[in-house]
Image (cartoon, rainbow, N blue to C red; front, side, top):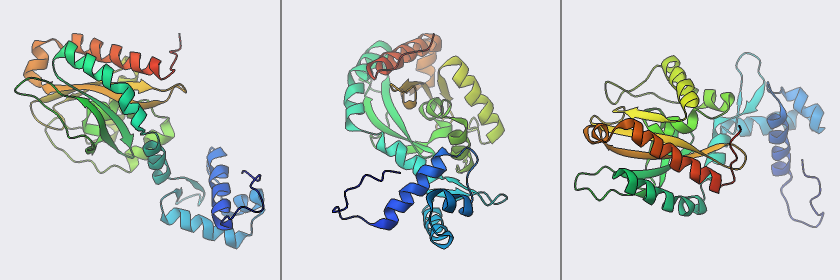
Length: 262
């Protein structure tokens, strides 16, 4: 914890202590109990318990029902995801989205993860009379979108498990995956092949092809996708579109400082 705060700076002690608790939990692999945290930070056990309970109520941390240990919670991952959503990312993506739309002739999108949903933050709309687009700022469940699956597939296992355990699965079409085990298998395949497909899983007759965008730290912070009528994408050959989407996502990742491991 940062102890270099000037003494004449007006601060709230309990907030500083809460940050200390979060930093200790972030360092822990398996979580920590009240006494462990109290000893590490030299806080009173009672005060530590109240801090933990407050953070738990806000879903910033969560408690294992069996071990009673605390760990970083779903809401904090959600906040981190939102923090990464910067206007600069959308601005950087726009030329790549425009180029992809020109190549494929369908609407291209940039999405980021927000908890167990994805948000559309940038878009290049198709000029076709029959076109598919989602309103900017709209949130949709990750598991039935190509863009959502492309991002979640590359999250650390702890984050991925947290997202899955906090998702209420709804079957939108006959193709929607609502079984966690089956979805986990698909996420593994997506990570191996480098792209995801929404095969009419959100809306019948609509297909989406997506690939992850990585930052300079190698984290999947967004995804680029193409969406359009299933019949039209098949006419254009799915494999060719997959290559275009992956190439575009790679270019944007490199612009963000990502260096692919050989």
